[in-house]
Image: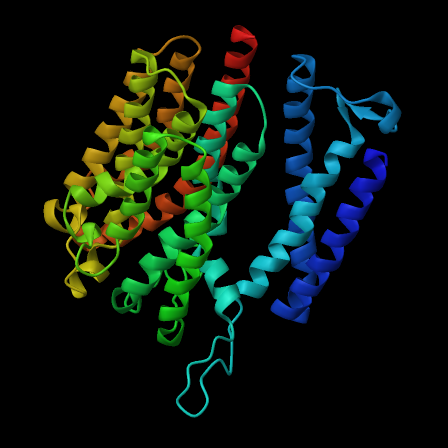
Length: 403
């Protein structure tokens, strides 16, 4: 089978799914705007695909068998490469519209809990827009260490892409329900507002989808893998569950949240048997400081609903202004730390700049105006994609240097 037929099958499935999702989730009058947005998104992704793939092909990181492609190229990228971003922008926006539409009739009958709507709400609760933030560190750590793609990499990447986020955010949404009722951010891209009838099923779903992956990954490694997986899983649960609630313990909340994103990289390094070097430790410390800054800044916007729900956080304790300034300092130190890593690591120092620029305008924010930082937080979510692109380019450079 040539790549063309595979790509066409992939696109056809995406188009069918995208149309169905969009029609079921949106209003008829909004369909025109939806498809215009899809077109603009594809145009942007097509440019990035042409540039990114041309760079990787030019550096001979991979190649295509000429007998399996048409031979038409944009830059060095064969036209078949553009099928995947096209399929993504056609299917995923419609899926998101369907997941976030207002739902009716999802109650229970005769006092019995209903599971109707569990899977769509669970998917929404897992924050699909942020899946890459945990899967990418794991995959990058393994690939750069082992220089090969095997079943452990695939299984681990899938685990940290979906089940891990389902547990991390789903458990949080269950135990944060009372405070989320007072939080206008909830119910969309920044988290689901899970109905009480779905709380217990959500916890069971998180356990069922996580435990098998944890056991498989644990069996493939030694003590370092067991310890890193244990720390990762414990941090996911301890942040939210009643009795621990690390998210209500100032400073510990930021430390735990950062562990959520750094631990996948540590698990990947442990599975790959990476050598612990000073440069690697500095890189992980910089990543950890970045995670702390991200959590601290994100907590600022929730000061009011958190105080109403009697939830303590780093932001509610030290105040909005000090928390913002702390986040700026943490991002600055993270960037400076990268300057001490082996080449091309210092190039990553520049990645701290857009985060600081996004946060710094709120240097003098007050508790009463803290909610305004939500604008910057939404920008932060998308900044992660730009940063991921730059990090990938740096990793490609690293790969070419050490090959």
